[in-house]
Length: 442
Image (cartoon, helix red, strand yellow):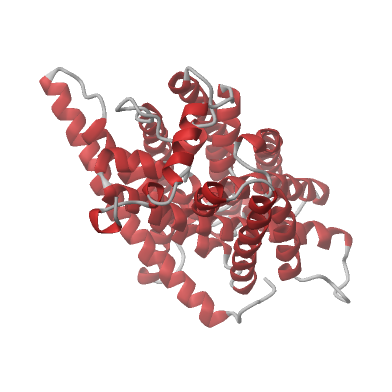
């Protein structure tokens, strides 16, 4: 099929054969492996850490409502995507191909664009978070300013390590890495929540203020920004790719994996978000670990858990970009030449991501813009539209109509939320660029 007729890269030059072979091979992972992968892609420290700040930007009523709504909608959306993986009898090994099978070529390009935005934006944000955590551990032991390492140096070190892991061939090869990451997710959440509550009790509660800060315009834009942060916190643009690594019965294993991952997410997200805002009020920092003060050794431990967890998440999210190259290279080269090409394009990817992270280490801003532009279209809007077009609706006319109305409302509402969050995020980046120089040691 030619590009003029709406062809996609998978249909040109042998990419389709690679995808077909992958589908016919089948996955090897269990539902536990699916839970590891889903928990690793969603529940990162970069997703946990800004939630108390998001609540502080919205206030208790709107903040709690937004967090609970985000949880329920993305859980249902994940189950919808899992149910549609083989909706027409064919196995769809990527989100792009699933969207193409439902919506045609425009669905393929829609997902291709937003998945790249989400993946790259996510990895920029979490690389900044990893560098910040590494620097926090370093400062615990290196207390003088003489010869101290900068944030940029830690970002580069983390990037070099990720380049090594990028040579692993696929998501399934990361299963033990992601098992360790899932354990670190629980460790990070437990440590951060415990220290937050401990610090909250040490603070004079009369000095904690929960009112929204700034001018009326500032409050509005911060609220927009917070909506993007919450969207980022539930972002998972890789569900079909994860589902492709799962063994039969694929659909049931994925349902169990998603629900298990969300049980971990609900307990940890809500507890940290509510306790963080309770402890520090409107003064909470965008990265919650920056607000913690004592005991120091537990803060070091939380930062180490954060780095370990981010290691696996970064790998999951760089795979869509790598796949663009792999589909062409595997059709032409094999063995040593393919591995050399892999080293070339993974190195180029890591250089670009590391350079942006080091030049503009504005963690909270990248979280928000990535949530607004990348994850909202893929995790809130598209699943609702896909369900209306290809999902199995109730046979009862009244119930069928109600489901259609609710699903349509979700798509429209979160399209508006994404647009507002994008406005708030772009404004925040513009203000930070004016305030700080490039390569600022935050």
